[in-house]
Amino acid sequence: MTCNLCPRKCNIDRQHKKGLCNTYDKILAANASLHMWEEPCISGDKGSGTVFFSGCNLKCVYCQNRNISLNNTGKEISVERLAEIFLELQKKGAHNINLVTGTHFADKIACAIGIARNNGLSVPVVYNCSGYESHETLKMLEPFVDIYLPDFKYWDASLSDKYSKAPDYPQVAKQAIDEMVKQKELVFDDDGMMKQGVLVRHLCLPGYVENSKNILKYLHESYGNRIIISIMNQFTPANLEDYPEINRKLTKEEYDLIVAYALSYGIENAYIQEGETASESFIPDFDCRGI
Image 1 (cartoon, rainbow, N blue to C red):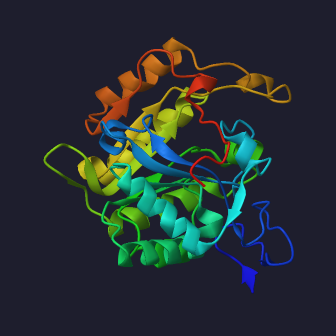
Image 2: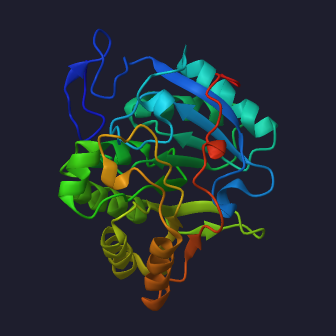
C-alpha cells in the first residue's frame, strides 16, 4: 500500500522503500520521557509524556532534532508497544501524551491511541507537528487527538522552499491550522492545564522579522483568542555554513521587535520566551530511553 499521509504525497510503498520522510512504515522512535520544556499549559509541574519519533516529512535545514529527523536514530517498535509506552508515561504522572513529529506514522499512532484508551489511557493526547499536514490525515486523527501543537514557520513560500524544500508550506499550514481549530475548542482544567484546543508555535528566524510579523498578524486576525500562540526565540544554529544568513542566533533586538509587534496588535493569548533558550541543552538525548 502506498503512502500519502503527508502533503508530500510521495506515493511510495514504505513496506519496501523509504518515503521522503526517510522511514519505512515500521514505527521508529528515539525517546519517551517526561519533558519539562514545553509551554507551561502542556508541561505543567509533572512534565509532558513525550514520544519523539524518528524521520520527518519536512526536513528543515536548521532542525534542532536533526539526529532523529535526518539521521534516523531510533528503535523500531510495534503498535502494541507504542500503546504500552503511552500507558507507562501516564503511570509516571505525565499530564498528557505528546507525539513529536509523528505525521509519517499517523495511521499507526491512531491505532496505538485506540489500544491504549481501551486499556486505561485517560490523559489528553497532544499532536506536536510542523504544521505541514494533510487535511485527510487530520480528519483521521480527529477522534484520537485532543490538543494540536503545530508550528507555523513561514509566511513566504521562497523561505519554505529554501529552508524546508516545501514551497507550498504557507498554504498547507494555513489550511491545516484551520482544520485543527475547527476540530478543537480551547479547554483548560482548574489548574490551567490545557485539555483540548490548538496552540500554534512560531520559531522566529534570524534576519526575518517581517516573516514573523506577518504570521502573527494572520493568526490573530483569523483566530483571535480561539488559539494560543507561542512566540519562540530558541533558534539554535548548527551545520548552517551553506546558509550564512541564518547561521547565528536570533538577537534580543529582533525578538523584542516581534514581541512588541504582537502586543501592539492586541495579541493576548501568547507565550514568550525570556533569557537564553537557544541552547543544545534543551534538546533531549535520543538514546531510546523509554522505548
